[in-house]
Length: 163
Image (cartoon, rainbow, N blue to C red):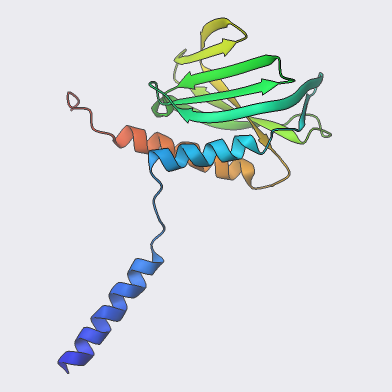
């Protein structure tokens, strides 16, 4: 009877541990976002006013503020957004022209807390853009989920002087 009990307990532990989804760390989540933005490299980005250009490089990296999204269009115009994901208020999709293989996600922030770099000019803005390849119909959902996960991870980090 004792052996049967231990066998049942062992089976229960194995079953529940396999059913859990792995939780990504901050670094792994940023790496995933980097992979998603890099999918847009080489594709032409067209908005409703016409062609913006071809995305020639793109990256998402961890920064002192939290995260830095940077992408270059046609090897000349560089856009960079640096902000703390804890300050995300909402995430939405901006659908570009139907012929564009690239869409962009608008990340709205709680105030002008994002440092925006555009070819040498710097300003504080309340948003960030994230170009993504729209060929995968689930990309918007996946990227939104990753940013929300990153927001939760950073919000959970200990603040030694917090309450």
